[in-house]
Length: 442
Ligand code: 4AD
Ligand code: MG
Image (cartoon, rainbow, N blue to C red; front, side):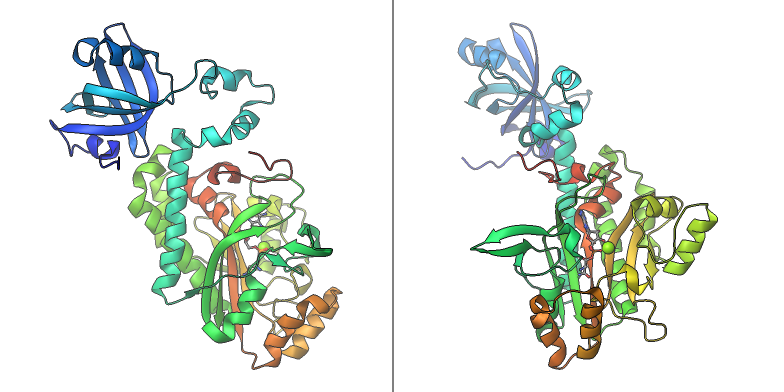
């Protein structure tokens, strides 16, 4: 029963005057005992179908009349142009219900249920996430998300980066112990990976240019607009590269994503109320570079309480980026603010050769990356300085023992990029089943 006609194509006028067979779900239904107006939904759009008792017969008409919202149906009929809403409707000649809905358990997501929900609308929709996915807002978001994923792949593949997979069970931290998820592992302790990076560095001398897109895990205790405990991480690693070389790719991939969204998802961006000119600005204009010290001075000038040496948290990035017109790179963070793998600046080892890319409009960090400490001597110093036991990192140190080279990379929070480019309020709007400290269901 392969489906070959899509509502989106009907709405585009490709079938005017023709007979079609449409498969989909009942989105709305109203009318009388003689005529029903059924709005049919599929993954590509909604179309009104006019069902007349006289045309389809009593039995089929009764079935359609009593069919509840979200019943799945097959509808056959003639496409007719109208001057209403979408321009086309279907004059139904026959129809059948495929999967009905039990009247004792009607589709739970309704305006009144949302208004009356004990825990509020947001929690209600999260509890019903598996059903909420099929609503217009989520469907649109998931399509834009898919485009962002596609753009990351095409950016790196077009430049001959090799896609490479790292393990998700690991023995040590990359981004500090406080957000490690511990899992029992056959009588030992293992952790869920926070980043692909250390294992990517192992393959750097083999592949030289590599990337991935995979989940990373962080035990973020507080629930914020931009933190998930399971997020999608696009990461790249490159041999023979400096901090500046890596930033060029960070800028390159983000601008490519913005451009691809405009090319492929203009309709969806408009649907969620995104200003297309802003997205075009992010695609077309270069991203300035700014040193951490300058950012701290700017913040202090704005009256924000920030001390040199702190990593900038969301509250500070929000203020800093509120008036940015495009994303900005912040470079040269203090060594004490960043993990051991960052390479100290040979010109002033108080700083490391790193960068964060901060998105404008108050969104803040979307990328973290930089040059890696690549000599054996330096990496041992950095690991000891952090007070981390060396055992879990022996493999990592080995990479430096056999022909170390300058190299670097970055990690980009894909869900954060989707949040920012679509103008969403909260990161959980952008992922099908958001995970945070309070929720692992559904
Ligand atoms: O800045 P982070 O911690 O850097 C790393 O993990 C490096 N090892 C990456 C690398 O160089 N290969 O994380 C990178 C990005 C952040 O800028 C942010 O966009 C995203 O990952 N991120 C999160 N996104 C959603 N929820 C969370 N809890 C996130 N933690 C980090
Ligand atoms: Mg970071």
